[in-house]
Amino acid sequence: MAKYVKPTKTTKFHIDFNWWAQKGHNLRSYLLEHLCDDYRDLAEPDLETRTIDWVDPDTGQVFAVDRLWHTIRSHCSQNPDFIPGNLTLTASIFRLFIANNNTPLTPAEMHQQLKRKTPILILRTIGGRTVYKGVRPATAPVNK
Image (cartoon, rainbow, N blue to C red; front, side, top):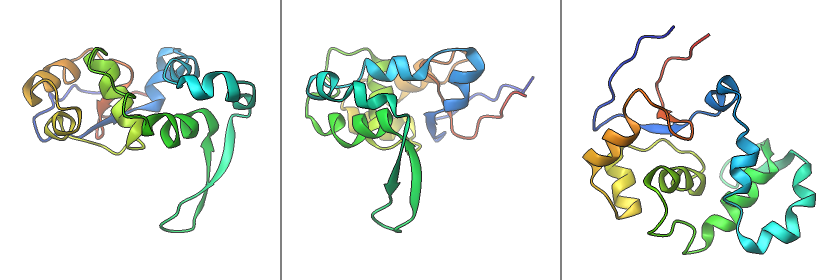
């Protein structure tokens, strides 16, 4: 088992997709909860195709990406109400990572983008031993 290292204010976090598989949780089911109404009815049957080819506009490199993740990130997250003020902090953080394509962020960066809670409260929420929604330090050791 990996040694626990307490995160600090400068620790960057991200969604650890391996955590979902290791815990036996269904990430796709949870992602469906974040699908906007515009795509829930229109795109859900098409989302059974799990991956699509996506071209990085900066590099031209082609990647296979999860279609559901891509739909939420590229369409739903563009809605100004994607992260409503009444959403729980952990769900807000999860949606923030969807919106920024899971780019690692510090608690201060999360605070700046969410415009709620303090960086210390964000750190206390996601920086403990309990992992919420797979959000973990980006440098967390992997348990094998």
